[in-house]
Image (cartoon, rainbow, N blue to C red):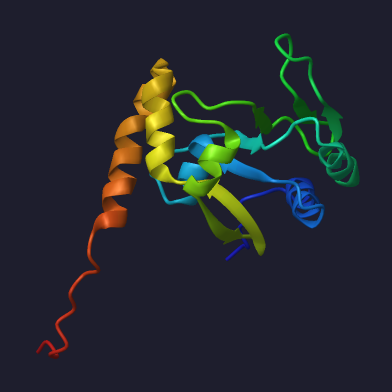
Amino acid sequence: MADFSAFTPPERALLDALNRKQVRFMIVGLSAAVLQRANTATRAIDIWFEDVSDPRIGEAVREANGIWVSGTFGMRPPQIGGDELGDRLDVVTHMHGLGKFADEFVNTSLITVDELPLRILNLERILVSKRAAGRTKDLAAIPALEEALAALDLPPPRIDPRPRG
């Protein structure tokens, strides 16, 4: 069986560099939901930075052989890309229906993906944001998020220790 990785090698290199440089960020949106086993899919990896003006972001992106465009407030959002990194990484500057980064950071979980420690926004908060955004694509994801959230609350299955026979 082939090895599976959630990230391409350049994406992994970027996330590793962000961690080493101690940039505060979290994975949000459906990418975070998929990492929490929600039965949905997304092409994008949504990253929310505490401070998009942090120069360490650009340093980390360059280490991963990518391009960082810091954006123009109100006109163009920040972007991460380049030949190696591709266009799958989306920089999020706010989440509909949620507080500021610092307020939401407490609503994250630290998980390990591909041997990388990552902060991901909890399903409850992703669900709040999808409802608040109200776009067709966000509303379509709600049933999968609710199902994943309900599965997290289920008690473990009871196993009968008696042999069947």
